[in-house]
Amino acid sequence: MTQLASSQGSEPRSGSAAPVRILFLCAVLVALAVAIHFTPIQAWLADAHHLRRQVRLLGFWKYPVSMMTVAVLVACGVPRLLFCTAAGMVFGFWPGLIVAQIGTLLGSYSAFLVIRWGDRDHALRRFPRLDRLASLVQEQGIVGVILLRQLPMHGTITNLCLGLSAVKHRDYLIGSAIGLLTEAVPATLIGTGMVKGSFKDTVRFIVIAVVAASVIWLVAAWWLRRIRQTRSGATLIKEAANAQVQAQRD
Image 1: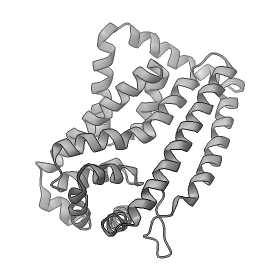
Image 2: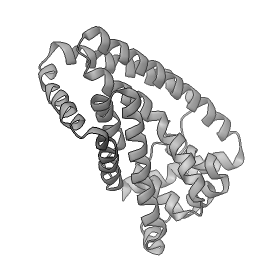
Image 3: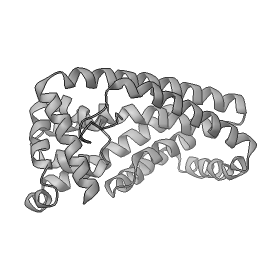
Image 4: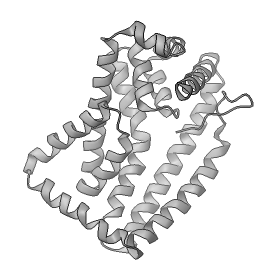
């Protein structure tokens, strides 16, 4: 969620970037709303309506089948926000959010277990900086997991770090459920709005998505500033930035 940068390329930015991100999001989503209803994209979305009808034919089974599909693909490294948007398009906001959230959590937890029970030494040779970061996360428990989920690290790297740590399974599940929710809400709202029949309804959901994302980003920025004021939090954020740089180089 919060961007990382510094005078040396390793320190995260402060929350001052949040208003810029909000304005950028507004511009992008307004353009998206116009494109959906006044370009050929509207015709392409007919496939989404067809998919909705096909999924509903599964009856109650549409929920567990969709959750397991999301779980498998997320465990394989497919970006989770794609499924949040797709779930919003197919199920609507609340059912879509629940389906995407549970599926993402199951997929992430599966990857976490594979890493924890796998070859730790090989993973540390590949990403040596994760050892220090994993130790810092486990010291903070649920808060450490939530914090790591807010940093702009690929989900695979995040799960790798958490799997290498000694964080409790309960802390992983609770922290991940909270941390994953922050981006899932606006992404699912956007997906829900994309298949609305009228321009007015699409704009309404996009406005709600902007408001939700704005509140989440501002709260996250405030929280990260507070975390950075503590020695352990500042060290954790710095190590996360270093690990991200290493992963990008590798």
